[in-house]
Amino acid sequence: MAFRRLQECDVRGRRVLVREDFNVPLVLRQAQDDNAFPPARSAVLSERSESKGQDDEKESIADYSRIDAALPTLCWLHEHGAKTIVLSHLGRPDGKPDPKFSLRPVARALSDRLDIPVGFAGDCVGEAAESAVAQLRDGDVLLLENVRFHAGEERNDPAFAQQLAKLGDLYVNDAFATAHRAHASTEGIAHLLPNAAGLLMQAELSALSRLIDRPARPFVCAVGGAKIKDKIGMLERLSGLVDAFCIGGGMGNTLLAARGVNVGTSLRDDDLEAARRILVAIEERNVDLHLPADAVVAPSVEAQDLAHVVPIEAVGEEMILDIGPATAQTYANAIEAAKTIVFNGPMGVYERLAYRRGTQVVGDAIARATEAGATSVVGGGDAAAAAHLLGFASKMTYVSTGGGATLEFLEGKRLPGVAALES
Image 1 (tube, one colour):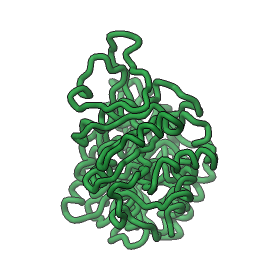
Image 2 (tube, one colour):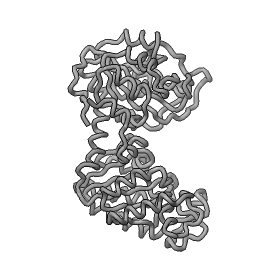
Image 3 (cartoon, helix red, strand yellow):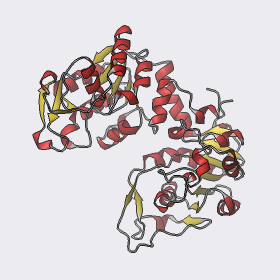
Image 4 (cartoon, one colour):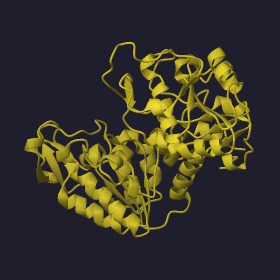
């Protein structure tokens, strides 16, 4: 991949349009009145002292990881005197304004974390955006309203991309997690302005490329999640790269079923053809395949008090909701012997206390291997959420912000947002 890096650009005094991924989860809080959400204005400076703990804020951010991941790029631009204009989406507002998907709470969070006032414009194009941009001084940071409030964003409409482009002198894509989407703010605009990759984009591509190009061995992939069909492309490609798979979750159930094992009422793919194809590919490539030998089962997800461990052949009509202790130890042993590790999905329903132990054991094993010198990458999505919840994210070499983008990169697909930056 050949693209210009942000550090190679002279940004002082220039209007720099930065695409970040601030699609963060918002949680409703008690508000003093129904009109507490401020009306949109052309620019609002969110002072740090006012952004913290306001009783009249209707929404607050539940997870700051994507905001924190963007800080190195935004700090670099601020310190180098750029007039920084940030683009992002939030949720699925279906191409029209919807207050519950406003990025205003993100502006407050950015102000707090950057320790500077962050402006907010009530639209990403038109008079509101142009007026706010015109007021910027060197070093200022401005967040524009949700680009998905316009139907042209997801359609990659050239006219909408042109409206965005007229606000800047340089385009920086720092949103790896959206790079698999050919949208106006992720792909279209890159053809209209000089462009570069932000620091987060560079870090993502570097970490994931190392897994494909030059992994230290043994290379182990611990993978879970709901369904084989969601990750079949990744599994097929990685089966030609890794030395071993440790598979749990619904994926493990599907592979067990494809081998003729009764998995009861467990979550699994109905169509087993893809699973059978993966099993053949793994066998042909002499990759070690670890599947559950025991499991935590219960009559239903909600019946945590009835959860118990059984050998895999004794599942009966119950649900497999986590790998069992013997399986977890086998996986941990394989992981601790590895030099490169990918964690791409939880081993069970980790959100419930009774079914998270398998993911915890696997995560702790990855942490020990990393401390001993292995390279470990957490592949975004549910894997990253589990790693953060269970406390081992900070012990990994790299935690990807991408979900679908990470999967498609590992499948070997060309990502439109990255391709548009390549020179």
